[in-house]
Image 1 (cartoon, rainbow, N blue to C red):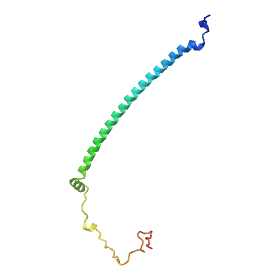
Image 2 (image 1 turned 45 degrees about the vertical axis):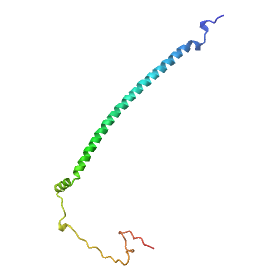
Image 3 (image 1 turned 90 degrees about the vertical axis):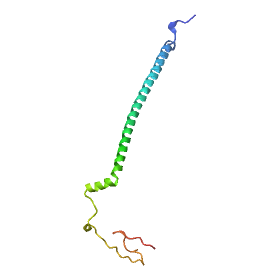
Image 4 (image 1 turned 135 degrees about the vertical axis):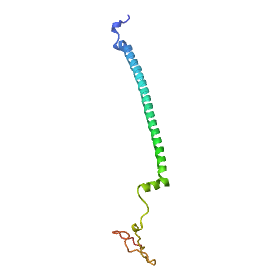
Amino acid sequence: MAKNRKYRSAALRFGPALKAVLLCLLLGGVGLGYVWQKNQIYELGRQRMARETCLKRLLEQNQKLTERLGKMRTPLALGQRLKDLDLGPPLRSQIWRLPEPARDSSRPDIGRPLVAGYPAARAE
């Protein structure tokens, strides 16, 4: 005698429903992943464009500053800058002439300190 529907196991009754739920979750996850990926691609493209714009602006600024530095290094510009700052060669009264100390060339100065507080190295 055939079994009645009433006595079927719970796995047989909820199996198709469970399969449908899992399939819906899978499709929903795939759809959500697709939308998230598209959003990431859009956001990264926007960031790339912003950085390229910033790079272009910085390269133009660098070019302008390089040209400005080149103009400032010319002898004419340097002479004008000296004139603006009121600089020139020193006067005779501003120059101090120091005599060169006499040195005995027959023997080296081994015993004399090179710098105050530091003894000279001795050759032995």
